[in-house]
Image 1 (cartoon, rainbow, N blue to C red):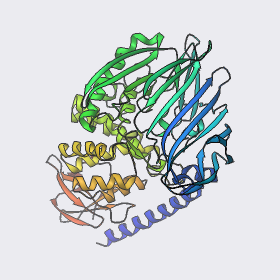
Image 2: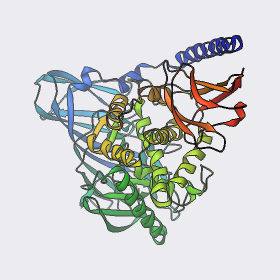
Image 3: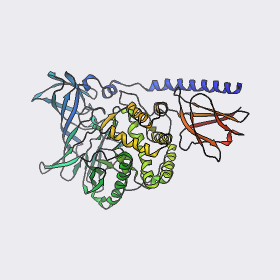
Length: 556
């Protein structure tokens, strides 16, 4: 017994010292500036008005990498106010702000713009103002991982331009209330481009307008709520192919826009798209944007989940640029970008995190959607192998959840570690029928809504009948994984407990003797006896295939 106590004390002191050092390091790194707070915090100057409709109307001068135009803000006042904030990166000029035929006074601080109205806007009033702006937007050097305009040309030398701004913010190229919590209800996107190319944006093309011998304007109407970072331009010399898919809500229009040089490769997209929609409507429910259709648009960058207008750059091949990152082989059966970015239509676009800190909601579920695609078409065993293989990419460097109010997301582990977490939740629930019902229920309950950590956790707890609070805290709000400590005493009896950063951590796990079926045991942070006797700790097996955990075996 003394050895056990000494070991426990040593481990506790080690863990405490490690946690203190980690906390100090994180505190040193977590220094945010005023620009972060202006973008990430919901102050009264942002919550005082609720965006209902935008009309973004711009011209893109490709030769000079210059944009100019306006955005109409149509809003409902939530409170009485005389002053509000909208956002536009400081390298772009606010030329004027119009309200009821007059120009309004405004001030700028970093990427925030503060507008003063001549009179109090009464609570409940429906009103609007228009921002005229211009300038050279930031050029993305590594789209889509950094934000801005991706200025490219195709192999024939024609312009090939796209926007991508998730994380950095939509205000990098157009004025808006740049916070994920306020999704505009509908939107008109009007973009004038040189006649030699066309623009493809979100929603449906309702009008093409020839402006002069140099420019044509394309008007795209978005009928569903859309988050500002999803609004996109895609400019190129495109070949367009249209078809439809009979889904759960009827006929869904599908449009493919690829460079003319690649028009003979559209069949690859058609097969992957239909397989993806079939699998995801089964697991998640109806595609959330039937009114706006589904599009895949070829881009020079790898891809982005732009709502109803997915950017595609995987070069018409299966895998992730031809590779299977899981090492299981199952990732080469399908086109990664079609599947992953389409998964975001449910998790990210339908269900959207209110704060960038909870971007794990988007990426964890969408990473797991890849496994569910495999499950639907190739079986559960293949799906589990894919999830397990993905663990190789996990760093456990910091929590999946970022800090609130400063426009910062958490660890990149939100992808694969998040997917592994959902696979564990499925294992713990131990009913694929219930798990599917929960996934579909999430997309129904939070249809076209913004959510946070507690929304997802509360729903999961209620629908599963299992308290996942401690599990969520450990895997999302902490950086390490829990360690299952198993002790075999001299008489062969086995005791175990969890060692974790989360106080009072508890989680079931399957344990058994080698070669025999494993039994599920409810384990917490205190040592408890298992109804197992073994000659050595080597005779024990823990299910580390379905549970992403550490295991510490020792005897006394």
